[in-house]
Length: 83
Image 1 (spheres, one colour):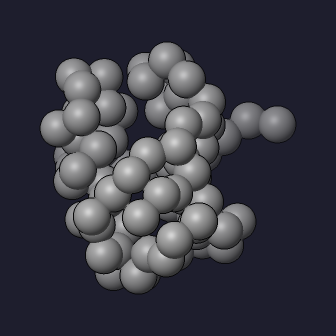
Image 2 (image 1 turned 90 degrees about the vertical axis):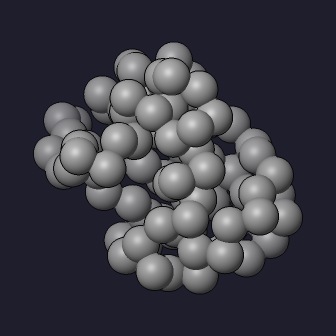
């Protein structure tokens, strides 16, 4: 399925882009994060499991076990972001 990824604040700075569309086999947010961590060294650094990263699905905060659907928008951001 295709989903849109959005990155904010330090996550965006590390990955080097604010948005991308990817094809994924992930069934939930946790699986997606694991897929992305091996996508590139930058993704691995920004989304590492030892980093506190918040996630939103279609602009609503969610957990790692939240299921994904075709066309979803997933946003990754640090726990505290500026305005």
